[in-house]
Image (cartoon, rainbow, N blue to C red; front, side, top):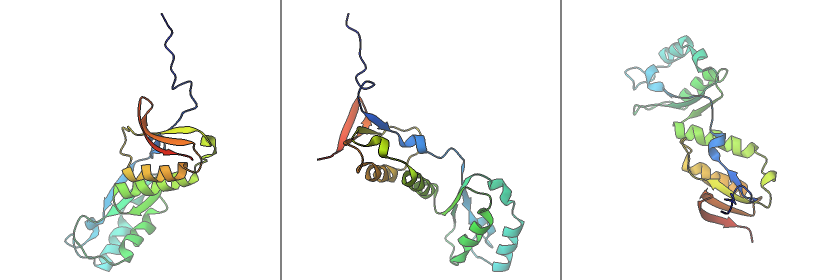
Length: 167
């Protein structure tokens, strides 16, 4: 009987898994309508008082996505003022959704990576993930990887889709 050989494990093929860079710290979505009069109207004095009396320490070492669930008209400074209170405690604050926060975190992470170890190698951009990696992050990753790699495939080693091959 012939020995079974794992050709994938023995190849130069590299796997780039975006799930490896998914934030480990909690992500909190904060609805600012809780500080609006009737959920819709920002009264500056009351708004500032509520922010001053809020327990901001509960957001220590988390990511915060600020949004307003109501169709309120807010002054441009409202989100910025909340960010002033959050900044000393949080890892990052974004005005937007959890997805937009993930995009911002991934952008910073992908910008800081050293891609030199992938130089000249065939690469699989792992496509199956258990965590909610936004689709846009795959587009960012491909752009970062292309200058370094020999080729990029998407998926798994057993069933991958070719995306790019250096000429």
